[in-house]
Image (cartoon, rainbow, N blue to C red; front, side, top):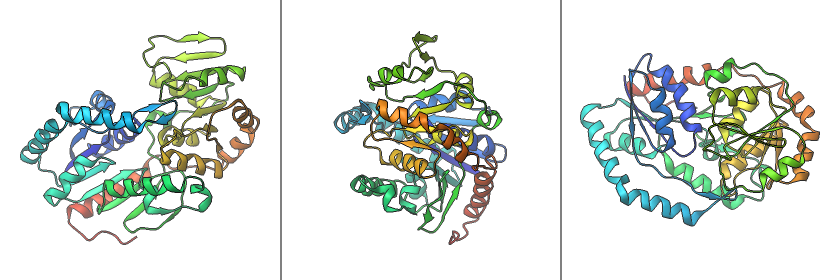
Length: 364
């Protein structure tokens, strides 16, 4: 089967998840990947001889002080589009239509591949964690205080890949499904996480995507606890120590080792790290990026399940309250289990077969 696989480039979580799925798909199928942003370099580096990865232009998000800047986001995307983004996408579109001719499209929240499927009458299968916003029912306490953001996010997610053949949603929480052709599955985890063994350390693992969050280091320093900080200083070539703060250069192996042994995790509300922390039973303090409702949703379910703590704004009081309850969170996390990646990958193969045969979508 020939599969066109689209990966959105905003946020590395989509690429990390897709890498695992692609490793499985390429054992049996011919796959062409289209991907934008930093995710392209990640997937290109890991692509084997049987996988082609093409770079396309995609939208990006700009944040300042842990809050999305709508004005700068619009300007950055307009600049990218008019300086080569759209022409490059058009060329790639015709190249794939002529040379690859896919049977099925898989989209990880990526619009270009979805539009290709619709324009050519090809089934599109959605795999991501975002569709849970629109395709499930959420209790009032999950959306309270963010009702407007919820409706906006719901509309955006709904419009991203509407009318897909099936929606496979990756999640560690399980609200009631409200739409057909939707199934919920445990998070897709990279093999390094599946192989990692839980350990007990005294440090906090801190992951901060946006480097403009300038107040965080001072708050972490006040805890007196060793903090291993990733992302806040992206260009580091070696570790930098400032008292109890250790600024770490990027290292996948080092990050996973620090995660599996962490006393707790301090991060935003991104799904990938949260899913990995839950699997490794590491409590997380989650402070979602303002303006990103998906992160609020993840964090509130994390809090509701007793797997960690959510806060609207980082503070010494919030950090202290989280650290006081780490033992309770760990006891709650003991009940979480999943069978690796088997659940979603098995369902995907079944859906792919039915889509290729042009069978009617399942009604569940």
